[in-house]
Image (tube, rainbow, N blue to C red):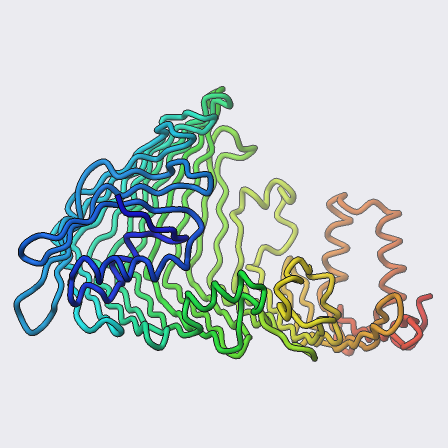
Length: 496
C-alpha cells in the first residue's frame, strides 16, 4: 500500500502528471511524491506495473487529519496504458465505472459512483510539459447518504453531456491553460430531514457551457514550503490567473414539503450569461452578466397563490486588491439591474387598487474607492488574521447612482475623502442629487392610508430641509456637503 499526503484529489493529480509520458512505476511514484507538498490529509493507493508497461491505480483511500477514512474506493481501477502512435503517448482507461464509500469515524455514511459512457482521455508531452485531451458523451456522478450521523437523507446526480476539455500543464514554469465545453449539465437531488419532517426535490439544467482558464505562479512545492515557514503571503505579485466563460439557457425547479404537507414550489430560468475573472499584479477583477432572469414561487405555504419576479438584464463587476504593499490600494464596484418586475398579485398585497405605478424598476450603481492597510494586506503571513476593519478608506467616488421605481426617479453623484489621522475617521466631500416624481408618490401613499397625516407632515418638513424645487414640476435637486470639521449642510444650510 502506497501513501501520499495531499490536499487535493489524488485522481486529479494523477491525471495531470507528466510522469505518464513514460509510465514507469518510478516515474508515477516520483510525481505523486512531488505533489505531496499539497498535503492536508492522506491518500493511500495501490500501484501495479504490467508487462506491457501499463500502470494500474486501484484501492484509493483518502484519510482525514486524524488518519480516519473519508473516501474509500470499492470498485474499478484506472489504467494508464502506452499508445503506439505519434499523436499521444498515454491512454487513460477504466473510467467506465468507479465506486467509493463516504466514511465518517470509520463508518460508511454514503456512496459515490462515477460512470463514463463513450469517452477518451489521452495525454502527450514530456515530464515537464503535458497536454491532455478528454472527451465524453455522458459522464454521471451519483451520491447518496443514508441519513446517519444526524445528516439528512439525500440522493444527488450530476450528469454532463458532450464534454470536451483540453489542458496544457507546464510543470517547469508552473503555468498552464484549460479549455472546456459542455453541451448540457443536469443536476437532480432529493433531500429528506427526518427530524424536521422537511423534504426537498430539485432539478436544474444548464445548456451550452464553455470556459477557458490560464494560470501561472510560484511552483506548488516552493509555495507550500514558504507558507509553512511564514516567509511569504498566500498571494504573490507574480501570481496570475484568468478565467472566462459563457452559458446558454438554464432552468431549475424545486419543491419543498414540510411535515404538515404544505409546499413551496420554485421555478427559475435565465437566458445567456457570461463571466470573467482575472488576477494580475495583486489585483482581482471580476465581472458577471446575464439576461432574461425569471423566478416564480407558488405553494400552499405562501400567503399568495403565485408570485413571479423577472429581470431583463444584470451586469456587475468588482475590482479589489488582494495583495497590497504599503500605500494606497484602489478598487471599484458596479451594478446594473434592468427592468426589474414583480407580478400583479404581489403588488395587490400592498396596492390592491393599482394606484402606484407598476413600471419595471431599474438601478445603476458605479463606485470607486481608495484605501490603505496599515501594514499592507497579506504583507506578513503572521498577520493574516487582520479583518476588513484594518482597511482605512481614503476616498469614495460615487460616479453614478440611478434608481427608478414606483414613479420616482433618482440620479446622484459625488466624491468624498476620509481623514484617518484622528481617533475617528472624518469624511469630507459632497454629493449632488436630483429626484422627480416624489410629490406624486407621497400623495398616492397618503390617499391609500399608508402614510398617516403626521408622517406625511414630517416627510414634507424633511423635503423642505433637504431639497430645492427644480425647473420642472415635481422635480427637486439637492447638494449635500460635509465640511472638514464634520458639519453637514444641505444646499448651503447647516443641518447640525
